[in-house]
Image (cartoon, rainbow, N blue to C red):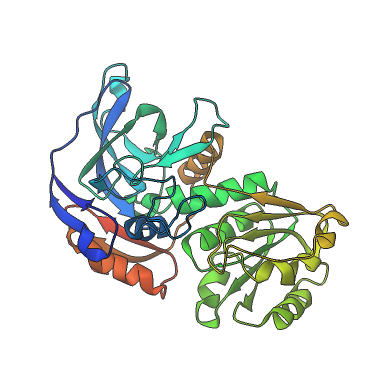
Amino acid sequence: MQAAVLTGFGGPEVLRVREVAKPAPGRGEVLVEVRAAAMNNTDLWTRQGAYGLPGRPEALAGWRGPIAFPRIQGGDIAGVVREVGDGVDPAWRGRRVLVDPALYDGPSDDARPVGLLGSEADGGFAEAVVVGAERVHDMSDSPLSDEALACLPIAYGTATGMLERGRIGAGETVLVTGASGGVGLALVQLAAARDAHVVALTTPDKAAAVREAGAAATVDRRRDADDLAAALAEVAPGGFDAVADVVGGAVLPAVLPLVRDDGRWVIAGAMAGPVVEFDLRRLYLHNVALIGSSMHTPAHFARLAADAVAGRIAPRIAARYALADIHAAQEEFARSAHVGKIVVVPGSDPTS
């Protein structure tokens, strides 16, 4: 079968599209024919070895440390079950499915992710992938296309984890940073679907798309700290019940005073800088909770899958590429000019 194989850390040259042996499902596993996969920051950062190691931030590493090469990338997968291993109900054959890409530390609904398809195990930038049967969710009744389903696992899974851990719900005023990116746009859409009042940070050229996803108001993220805080106070004069942050950096100290008593700041990224200085008094005097959120739990993903079946979400597809054109797909992704998800389709020749 054809696959995009990562052969080491480095530039685009270490990602090679080539023929590899089709995997076979073992006990408790299924073989999924990949109908669509989507791209995430982790695909580029894993190729670049950009995650560092404890005490060695410059070290080449994947998000959990060393990567066993060669590795097929791609954590966002939608497809059809074609083969089942021993111990798996044969009724799964032929079912349209969404794949939970997380590898967990145990079998409970609240298990923690300790690995990811496309990083610690082979992923979906291929014509087929083998995954644990417990990680596939039946999408037979979902109105979403395969390409739309493929947009969900990592971005919307991470967003669902943030909303769940932050207990963000109806009637609350929520600030979303980095709102035009994959996770940010998912946060906007999912929070709005929960009847939250969403204020989003983005750039003016992407504001219309972010409002279309459900934001009640947008603010230009490029303002300096004082101007940003003033603009946010104007559109949310009562402050924020919660902040869903995928950016980090100077946003935290600038906006923290606008978070209401008993508010929550949930953070799942540090695009604007991982080291932040802020006034701890703004945290403890107002009983604000600072919550780290990495991906999702099985329970979170099950809620996302239910939303997909019910058609409560509609991912925005920014571009489509054939698997053979994955280098062009990564180039467009790296430019960050798009809004929504970039989809890779094995065995086809879509137009971007």
